Image (cartoon, rainbow, N blue to C red; front, side, top):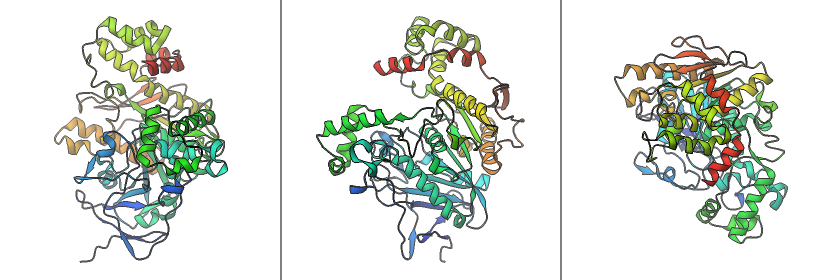
Length: 497
């Protein structure tokens, strides 16, 4: 029998297949949305996929951007995915090719340096089935390939070089606008969402004038981007890398093998992230105020209660930190505000151990940033923003640490821990909120209490737990105390440590 799952795009036809785990979902893997960015296309704006003849089979994930670390060697279906500058691919999960469903486009995490939309954690089949939505995940350029600012060196042709990773994401959204109707999706109802680095990318897309209208709602999970990289700093990064490699121009950089280029950039320990270049990103996303393009987009934003527990998991003092050691470590982050912040956190979390308090304070760069973004958005516009805190600690020995909510969003938690009623309860609450928000722009649904939008008067926050509940100005003592910390100083101290 001929596979009926054929979708027509503006460039040609694609053959999908029934998902192996979810028979009610059709999957398209490794859909090319842009041409290769290798060679003379390195550092340039992406080019849309060219038309083809016949039917392309979409049954294998595409290459991932060159990167280091274990992320680059994760396995899917027991096959290592290749790394290549030819990495502009996306994946689609849909309940049917007919219809007009909400579309949820995922921006993957692991900062701006690593990761891929094809990681198993982001398999969209269960979410698509549960919510009757279309789920899209994307690969795009990262690290030195996506964010090396070369405008001062290469001229107008490379004006977007410090933003091409985000321009890739924008191109993927244009592909969604032009093609998703053939996959059962509604191009007029697109939600972008992402966690950690993905949240940073969502925040950045909100600030990109050229991306306006390509999406209609946004979810920022543990990744608020308040400021981007300045053009001056981006140019200094480029000069340092060119000096390191002894090349004189962009053509010289384009001739450097990909691995050598990436390794040289990593050895310099320069921060490669979106650059405020005056065109594609005209200002910082939320500093001092939200970018104008973000003001009419409903937003949902939040973080996990103990984000830093993941990053501190290998700390030899885990669970054994003394009071004196807590005060010593806290001073590196808090400076002269150490004592008042420690007092506020101890009052907010009675019975917490020194280790628990250190985790809580270390987690504030995610949670405080989410508060800051929500406050600035709420002050600037009447368009609603909702805030949450993922506090459920029953699913992991680390508790509600960084990234722990993802499996609940994607409906993987109940599969990973069958028979756990609390897990099912939290998954229903979380996934239901994400789906409701994608469908209507409001996360309220039948299995959670009424969730008011965030305002600077009430600061209503949904606490996802078993059961979930709403708190006004959650952990207010912590918020007020940490707001007095000089974050620039604490970042500098951590960088020297």
